[in-house]
Image 1 (tube, rainbow, N blue to C red):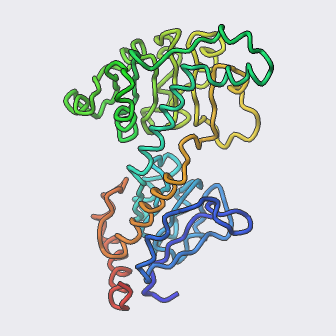
Image 2 (image 1 turned 180 degrees about the vertical axis):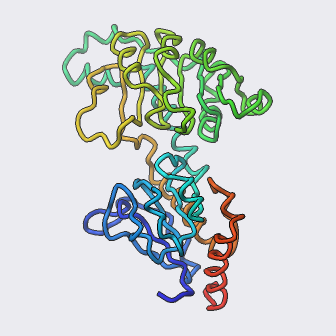
Image 3 (image 1 turned 90 degrees about the horizontal axis):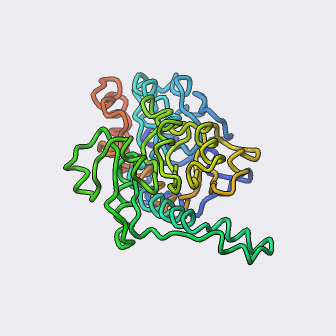
Length: 354
């Protein structure tokens, strides 16, 4: 490929072993009016991106592989690692910054689908849907009166982290007749929370007063193990915990014990401390738990929108525009990054690719 091309490489896990896309729409149509952008795909899937896989690329769109210091050890041409999602705990951001590589996420694209999934799980838990389904499948019709449900009406949602997903969840829940939602977020003030309709409280108050505790914060050094036995002990016996964020935020041993002993009513878990989960998980032994393989919010629309956002990052960089979803925007101030960026931007302009 000529120097005028802006090369974008997708990790191999977007495709099956026959090279067919696993997902209906990855948003690649964003590139159709930009002939200077050329797409390619890693030849093989690895758990960790290798330095050899990024050779010659200006951008990499990353689904599940981790990005380490070794991944960007020879990043002379690489401008950006674009995470296909909003979590970036599998990306060594400091290493990328040191290597003059931008890290971006697809902020906003996941808000609606994760919010819908969260509400769906809230209803499924409080109406005992999994248990009632099992009653009919096993011919236990007469046991139905043992599993009375409860409505969302007059109940309280508590969100740990009041970012885009939690805000969209609160927005979609209007009309269910719930109490004012509670929020714990050390990065927001009372006024900011109030604009979203939530009341900012301590973590302890949130756990003790909520009927549903939904986790929407990123996994960081400060949030790892944030929710343990002490926090779970504060929950009401008829309350539920939902985690659509990241495994590691919740102490799984403490949660398993609380669920098994009936100290909380149930949980819905989309993420786990160790992923992927390739053998039956112990939480599957419990009737009061709903489980998903870190995909409860996966929809055609979600992948389309995340793809469009990631592809737009590539278009923006190729045209000399700063993407708005950078995790490490300080990279823009690096003279080495500026020189690298200018080289590929100017090549595209000079060759008439734009």
